[in-house]
Amino acid sequence: MTSENEAMATEFAVGGKISKVINGCKISKKAAFSSALLVVDALLVSLIIAYVPYTKIDWDAYMSQVTGFLQGERDYRNLKGDTGPLVYPAGFLYVYSAIQYVTGGEVYPAQILFGILYIVNLGILLFVYVNTDVLPWWAFSLLCLSKRVHSIFVLRLFNDCFAMTFLHAALALLLYQRWDLGLIIFSVAVSIKMNVLLYAPPLLVLMLKAMTIKGVISALTGAALVQVCTLQFNCFGMKDNTSGDAWMDLSILSTMQCHQFQQQNIRKTPNDIVTTMFVGNFIGIVCARSLHYQFYSWYFYSLPFLLWKTTFPTPLRIILFLGVELCWNIYPSNLYSSSALFCIHVAILWGLWTAPCEYPYLDGKSTQNKEE
Figure 1 (tube, rainbow, N blue to C red):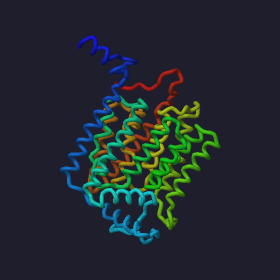
Figure 2: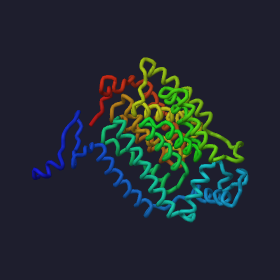
Figure 3: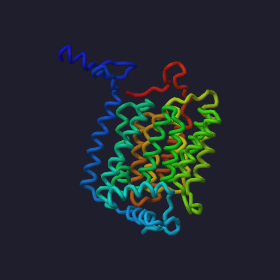
Figure 4: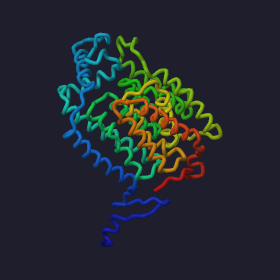
């Protein structure tokens, strides 16, 4: 390499991490690896859409319900599909009305749209992971290894995909203390599917510790306005399967907060925010009365982060991760797969409960030892 090229691209080590400077810009190893993962996974998604048959589950029902809405029907009892009446909030109707307009209700262009959504969602999550600095760079690849999650996005076209992408976008905003805008995006996610309410208890905990009461009220008002704009018309009789789990979530999360953080003032670092949000949602998953296959997308992307927050050895972390993926890919589920999944969930929750308290940046450095 010539001296000119060496000036344009040099490598150096900082704190045991390899970084590269290209034309004066520092590029971390994790950021570079994340970019490579996005390219590789985009290619994989393209191949799945091209060669793996679409799985008909809810798409036709979605389109039937949206068609009724676009024809002027505003009574939830009369918005039906071949899987039954509409049970999702009004934001779902707005999003899928737009999808129907763009795709003409055809599956193949919708798969392309959901493939793009998958990559956008993955990009947001990789951004979150890079900014929290909890995982070693190679562990980012775990975010791309789920057969079930690829299927949920590009073969089944579930509304969970949009709900979770908006949720993850809200989480990324919270890393920069953008609470008001983050709450608005969070509310949009709730308007698409109410499973996002499982994140409400940890979000409330964070807000009360990071904001004044006036600030909390202001942020909640913005979120409420989104719900008013996506008025649920005659939906007050809708069955809500997440509210009970959310209250259980809040109860257990509050206990864990007291157990782990009673001796410190929590600073709203990215690590703190993501830990609280992911753990709170995971508690809701553990307490859920039932789990359907698309529910895996609710917490899959948090699993690597949660596993690396425990003190488990890395081989055990990998085994638990693969165990969860295996259980979700057994169809139909049975007593053994369901029991195994529950036991793995409890093991992860126990690992989080018993993990030592962390004091991020208290001494200008993290207390967590990460493998590179």
